[in-house]
Length: 442
Image (cartoon, rainbow, N blue to C red):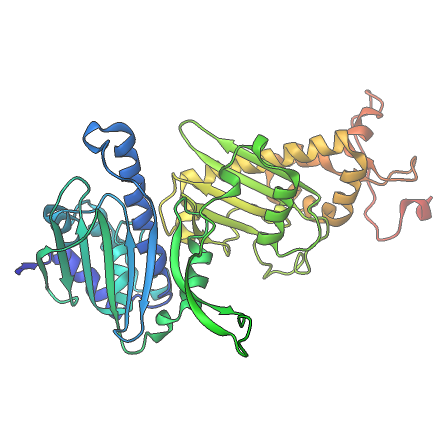
């Protein structure tokens, strides 16, 4: 067994993981599963493109194993794996400038700083938030020798040859005494479904299931069954032509927790210099908190199918707060903080393009399906008007979508239609702001 010293910055990060960044411990599962997914992606690419890996058996899967007696939680994958040099480079030193950048970004605010984990490529070290010892057993695809890396988060780590039947990596976390919640299958299952439900590879774990009594038996019993616990697909990544209306509606129900059918949806995939996918829904009824200052955002942000947040109001402007759906991009940093979302150019471009797309779709509905647009406007027209004051860049587009009461019509008319009927020589449009209807003012 050979002992190695951590690079100084890595030791600092380990210290922070243990003593400072405690606001959201469960993210260690997300970080490690994301690393496993990346390892599977890398091997998949090599098998497809590199002759040296053509003979490698690629059977992608991630396994989570709970051992309550040993108080360990293990996450394994069948990905590319690491050899001795890889383990030293990736876990013991700064492979990229990210670790140093991470340290420079730290503010002292635990909640804010915890959101930086992963953004700078230090996600593996999140395991030390819940474990006092971490072991990594890995074997690189195409190589026979496996290696074991282990550390108790001090200033050094051990590295030695090990045994592993096939390529891939296993991370074994010896949990701290007060971290027993992560030895409960239902807790891990909940975390995986929250963050990693849509990564493209299956995640398996043993779960207790009730087995009914067989014929002649009086009692049933619980039995451990190894089951896939994530969906391993993401509806928004599938081509629109391959998705049925029922599938769109089912997905809406699952993310919006709304038993009513959506009024409309818009699915867009942008490719080129900036790649992202959006899937937005317009509910058929306004949510209860629509006019509350503390309304819940209905947009979920994913990065490469990994859930990041559904509590960020900067993703879309407030006058479109009725939207439900998903934004997914590979061009955003993992664990984007609120400050980064506000200033990130990529997010700004996604937001601006998405707003134009939504307003454009609303214009199409108004033109082609008056009944549907009336239903939309009844629920969300007043909220849409907020955009006239808050979004000057799209003010003209929003104006085209407004419906107005007039002295000459019994029903509200589209602003665009009203303008068409105005004498070309008239330069002003007069309006009255009142709680009573215009018909009562006549």
